[in-house]
Length: 466
Image 1 (cartoon, rainbow, N blue to C red):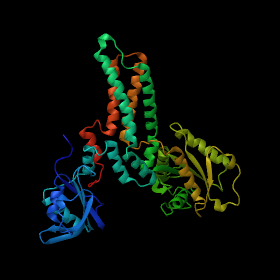
Image 2: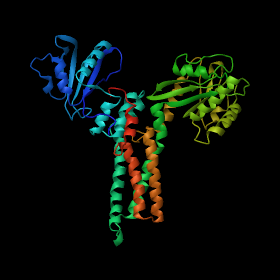
Image 3: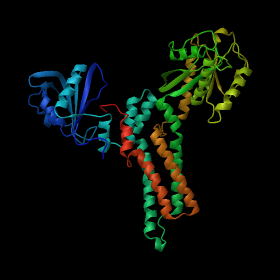
Image 4: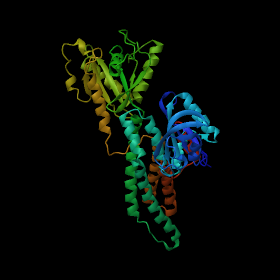
C-alpha cells in the first residue's frame, strides 16, 4: 500500500509561503485540466484550456462566475511530459497571501486535495521520471546554500551516482543468474560461472564501493558545511579573528582572558564552499566552573572539526610554545584521523618583524595576520578553499546522503563475505544468499527495493509543493 494516494488530483503552493511579487500554485493528477477549465477564462477567447497543448502558457483571469480573483498565467503540461509524469497545471498569480489562499480554497472546493510534503516528487518517482536517489537529490538541491553543495546535488539528480550503482548491480545480477543456473543442474555438477571472473568482479565492486564509502566524509561536510574550529589559549584574538573572517561583530571581544565561555558558530560561503566557523573557549587550566565546561566543549568541537585553526599571539608565544601546544593537541585528536591544522599567528600589528623559527616549521601551514586590522585574512580564506579543493575532483562521485552511506557499507560487507566464501569454496546456494543481500542494499539506494517506511522517511523531508 502506498504512503500517498496516487489516483486523485492534488494542489499546493510551490513557491515559498508569504508575500512576494508572484506565487506559483501547482496541480497534478487526472482532473487538473478539467478543474482549471472551470475557473480560468483565457484572454484568447477561442481557446479551450481543457484541450490546450502541452508546454504552453496562457494569460487570463481566475475566479468563479462574474467574480475575478486575479489575472494569472496558466502553464500546461500533459502526461507523461511533466515533472510528475501526470497532467500538471501551474498557476502563476500575484504574490498576495490573500490571493494564494483564495485560489487554493477554490481548488479544494472543487474536489482537489492539498498535497502532502514531497508528494509531487513522490509521484514523479512512482511514474519513473527518476529513481529514488535522484528524488532525494531534488530536496538537497532546494536546500543547497553553496556552489559545491549545489553541484553535488545537481550531479546526483542528473543520474551520475545512479548509473554507477546500476552498473554494479547489473554485473552482480548477471553473475548470480549463472550461479543459480548451476543450482538447477547441481546433480550434473555443471559450472556456468567462472570463479576467476567472479573474483575479478568482486575486486572491482569492492574497490568501487570503498571509494564511494570513503567519499562520504567529504560529501557530508560539503552538504552540511565544513566545520572549522578556532582554538588557542585565552586572549590570543580568536573572537577578533572570527569577526574578521565573518566581517561582522559576531563574538564579544575583550582584553579579559576567558571571555568566551561557550562555542560560537556561524557559517559563511568562501569560494563556493560553505564553512561553519566555531569560536571556542580558550584552552587553559581554570578553576572557574563555567569556564571549565566551556573548555570541555572546546575539546568536543576539536574532535568534530574537519579543519582546526590554532591561533597564537605572535607577540608573546615562541616557536617552542606553539610546538608544545600542538603536541598536546595531537594526542587526543590524531588517534581517529590526521590533524588538519593551520597555524594562525595573530596580532602582527604589534610586531616590528616576524618571529624567528616558524619558517622552519614546515609540517603545518603558518599564516600571520592581524585580526584587529583585518590584514591577511584573505590568506586564511584562500588556504581553506585549497584544503577542501585538494580532496574534491570533478570526475569523482561523492556520496553525501547518510542513507546511501549506510546501504553502501552493508553492500560492502556482503561483498567481503562473498569473497571469503569464494576462497573457502562454499556451495553456490550459500554464495547466492550474500549476493542477493548485496543486491538488496544497492537496490535500496536507487529504489528498486523500497518499503513504505523508507519512502515515508525520505519524502517527509520535502517541502509542500515539491
